[in-house]
Image (tube, rainbow, N blue to C red; front, side):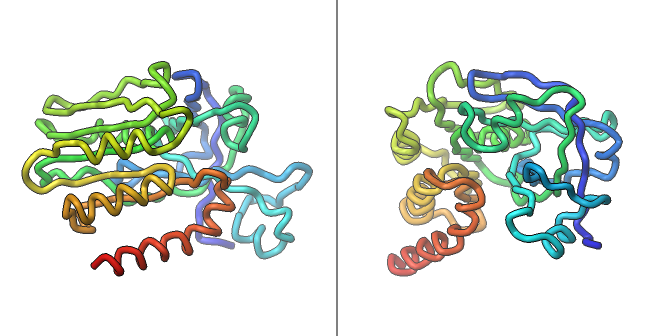
Length: 275
């Protein structure tokens, strides 16, 4: 048996937060061993069974991968923990939904109370540094749940600049920062092109003085541009940055994970050539 814990969630309720964002709240006894750590970007791997495949119980992803052919392995999709209530055993996850394409978005759109899903995790790596002089949080819709959770975790009196790229005003969601100097900018996407408007907004931004802490997550190509900008033009050290391409245009999660190591290696080579 694997030492990776598989949790089982049951849909309690759903809510459409905007035209393209669906909130699903999971609960049930299958979440009794679930617990999040200190990170505001905690995430889980949702497990989607392949149609027509009966998996042995207890459900064990590692065991399935050892004993079943690859085409029968369940698919995984990574999602941020928007909120976790350990007393009520309620796990909240927000999904971006763009029609029938993809796997997790259509599942969330069709989810009804009582539906069940397996999940692994959580993992995580970032939380706002309470000793930083200012915070920068940048992302697209894929990063919005992590950004929203992180904004709520900012220390009282925090100085923060939050920039989120969306398809239009109808996609804006209410964020709840603590009292402080927190500016939230919703950046409208230009003609469906992911990144250019957001990159321009960040590169033209006047950042506060002192030592900053940045969270920059979203589509891999524009994340690459801002990684270079923050490291070289803004002279931010690696330990001041949490930067990751959650996804890449033209790839599903499986394809992107397969190509991500090579993509990141090219970034490192580019950085070394600039040094």
